[in-house]
Image (cartoon, rainbow, N blue to C red; front, top):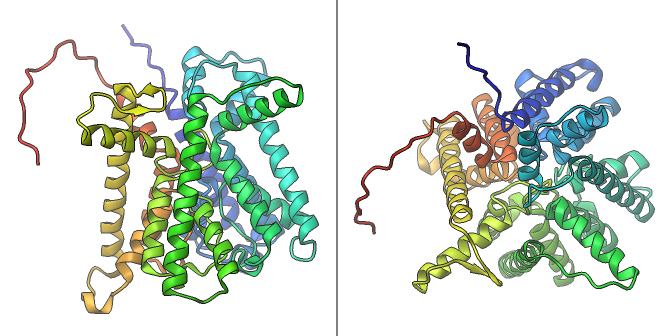
Length: 448
């Protein structure tokens, strides 16, 4: 009797992201996207993956290498990756009145919301409308503030790139030319933060706004409070840390301008990838602070990567409980359940393992046969690059374009895994497991 096999719904985003990357690679490799210039298959794959995974690492200058067609293709891939191929696919089936199974519905919910019980059609429609609305407002604001620097297409490209936390810029020096512009800095930071909060938090904030307009009182949920408070803490802590490291060790700008630039760097480390400071000239302390911020990332269900702010908050609550010999990890008025803590620990450990392996591989491919005295500084550059790829950030100290073919392929894999998240791949593996109806005898092990 033939067994009815059904693909795990967790495989769908993997397949669709791979399909978009493959299509983008073919298009970016074609001559019509960069007339008169040559882009190899590996560089085309790297660029397509970076755009679809909204990372921002580049091996060629986006603004000068690609023509209007190439930039438009990158824009479409960034938008597709930011919203998530699964979101578009679910909306497509909904609009065609196709039946979406309960399993798929829950899978979509788990990837985009902290609560999987929701109306698929209304939710996906709200995602698209909210994202396009924020990006449109951002594009208009950018163009009005700096019409000579940002044409309508350039303003739209940068607005989408900022909201999707992609970090792709049409300027070779990213946003360093607008380092001292308060309006441009705050518009971009607003777009980056909005794209990193998660759609559920954004829609809740929108609902609270409309309720207040109508004279009604509506409170934030426990989940949204955690996301907002943790995000604010990380931004401020990163801002202060980077400012002290740069102002005390690298006084290259006036204090006011440096404070603004350091605030922007703290925000953009939440996986956005734009920069107003030359990352390659920043102090080692600043780079280490940025590595920690990039690893954490932003909120679940957002355009950003990293292990997410909720994982960071869960881990800090768990460690604090252990330090106090507490029985529960408490955040606010609730204690975290064991399943949540297990996910946080697994995600953190797996992310760290992926980064360690990536650092090892890149150290082999980029200088494994060179003595240490001749490669001083390379380790931190590679460390920064790998974390940037895993967190889908896109910041770099300047070594991306100099990497070997093997190094670029390694980062391509890391970007792909980092965008979809290690938990998704674990879910795929677990969906194929056979249920075990017994438990083995437990024994203690000496630890520490």
